[in-house]
Image 1 (cartoon, rainbow, N blue to C red):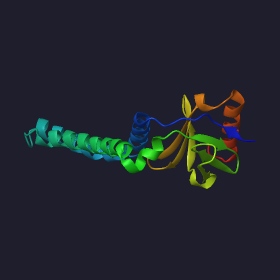
Image 2: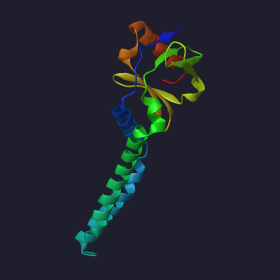
Image 3: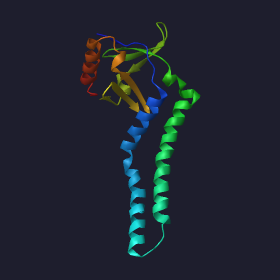
Length: 162
C-alpha cells in the first residue's frame, strides 16, 4: 500500500525552531562549562578570595554567545540559496520500499529508508531524522485520510524507526 500526501512545504521558521531545539537538547552538556565558571566566580567573589565580577559576567556572555552561535547557524542555513530546495513544496508517496519525493507528476526523486536514522511522533506531525539539521516533517494535515496516517505510522514501526 502506498501513502500519498498533499503537496506541502516546510516553513523556514519551523526548520530553525526544530533544528535549534534538537541541537540544544543533544548538546546541552557544553553549557555546563560556562555554568561552572559562573558558580566558581560567585564562590570566589562571596568568599572574599577574589572580589571581582568579571568571571561570572564572562561566563554568562560566553554561554549566551554559544547559544546565539548555534541559533545563527540554523537561521543562516534556512536563508542560503543552496538550501532553498528544502522549503519547496513537494508531494510524497511512501511505501515500505522507499519514499518518493515528487515535485510534480513527472519529476521527483527517491529516498531510501536506509537514509532515515530515526523518527519521532510529535504533537502535530511525524519527524523523520536524516542527519544533524536534516529532517522531513510530515504534519498530520498533509495525509489524505486517517487511514493513510495510520498506515504511515505502521510503516515507521515496521522499519523500527518509531
